[in-house]
Image (cartoon, rainbow, N blue to C red; front, side, top):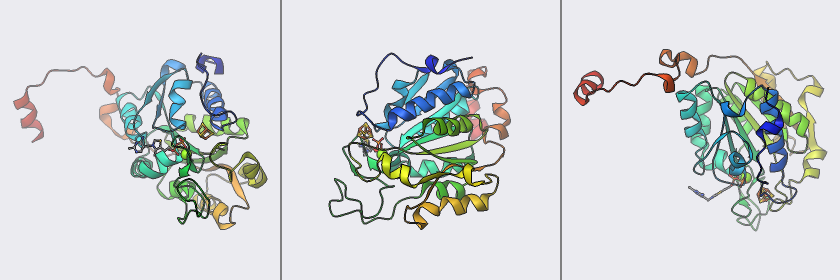
Length: 288
Ligand SMILES: Cc1ncc(C[n+]2csc(CCOP(=O)(O)OP(=O)(O)O)c2C)c(N)n1
Ligand code: SF4
Ligand SMILES: [Mg+2]
């Protein structure tokens, strides 16, 4: 069985010292090992951002694509070969901004994949502009007088769009985060793991200390993740308490057939299908 070291690359990550991305990298490698995944069966798919560097820092298959386009290649890989464990990784700008359309639709389809969002409330790579999860009033490079927009709330959004595993972790608690990611990898269906990730260089509001003072663990309060209603209640607690109380942990989990499992054509993975040359006219007759 693979260990965390089997997922470790020789190169040193190039994130800023103290960035929460280091903790996510450790938690992800640990979680892959805990979930019993082998490096040759894992694919890490990312978009563009500081978070988008993750495929370079995990020893597995990897694909760093376009900004906001984590989900399309991840979905394609899943459909082509269900024997692979597919992990999408991206930023809050990537997934909840430019990639929002993909995020919403993948949840109602319930592909079997885990999606990890480095939620640092800013555009890190492009040096600190406001992102979709930036809190109202926060001053950033692009909002020097304070952000006028209400933030996106990914957890209630995921719950209402049909995600079957919905969790929020904190990069300041690696053991807890590891168990949430491992749970998402093992879950048969779409798993969102939104991660509160301090960007120590460009976000001076949402620091490690900020989250530590406010976060509490759902499981320590006896939360029942099988109840959608209770999950929604908890999911709205952060913004309803003006970020005084921020629940982290597993909000919701349910078993539902995945999209892939409902397609008889995928009983044998597409990559293992025998390809027979088909003439153009024959194909036109069949499909048009
Ligand atoms: C289509 C497109 N638009 C804009 C950009 C510029 N760009 C690169 S990364 C990024 C935002 C990164 O923020 P986020 O997704 O939150 O990731 P982080 O760097 O914070 O991890 C932007 C706007 C781009 N690369 N491609
Ligand atoms: S800019 Fe922010 S998110 Fe990017 S590496 Fe530096 S601390 Fe991390
Ligand atoms: Mg970001």
